[in-house]
Image (cartoon, rainbow, N blue to C red; front, side, top):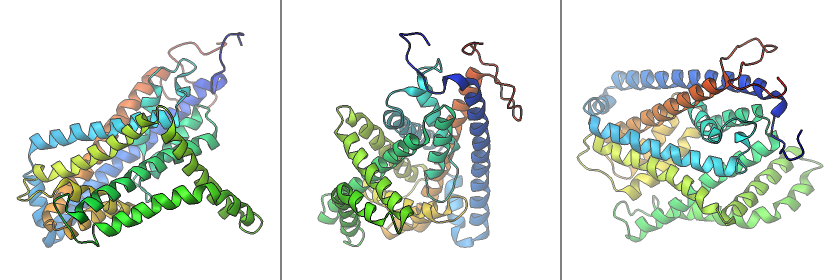
Length: 369
């Protein structure tokens, strides 16, 4: 190595990492596409077979295409917010751009993570797992990957909780127009606020408690230590000079996606469109249904639609809007992930699956080649 050159991550095996990366991404994108097809088939079958839901299908069939295009644009802005935050949190040193990979490599990997995340119980963790695989293929240490992905997840969760506090209190006090029942407004705000305070107060002292559990409950101790460290790292992340950029990306990710759901009511020509505060409350609380082990995102759909109905939205309108939101939320990341995969494949050459001893033919000569 030249005296003035800086070491790069995974430099000796760049071609091998690229080959495995592209194979993983292609596999996940194919499965994501199948998930999208499965989602559409399941939704159509359910709406056709259950007479009570047939009106929602009729509403979707008459959706405004102009609004659908607008929803796609809003979803693109949402995903761009995630990509922006991902680069600042997961790869702040821009390690992925090293070894001649390209200065926008972090954006391509982030889009691949969005597009390749499977519809598994646990929401975004399927995508985070794929992102971890990609980063590991490029040589980033597994422990560092886990810590940074967890930090990004905690940052997203923290912003969601703050949104519940702000809009829940606003609805409960009448500052915002909409539902005023304390059970649906004040209670979620209090629970979210308590969670934020508890995390901030308990995390600094959790390490001592974890040490006392090491002898008898090692796995629990490791989990507590990891979560506490993630909370502290997230706090430090927010206090960094450029931390506002990451927060801006996460806020954009949430707000624009909620705007997709809100504007979906206009797309399906709803007679009464709920207010944005009501929609964001239903969105955040209902999304918890995605943790249930149900196929075709049924947990998320049922959770969001159910919360909207509790907030006073007509059942068929709520279901139609949520289904349209979910379909676009699948289509846009899948398309973006496919484009990112195509760019990566073009940059690193064709994939030769099963030929591990035959490296990828890169566009530029490999070091020492």
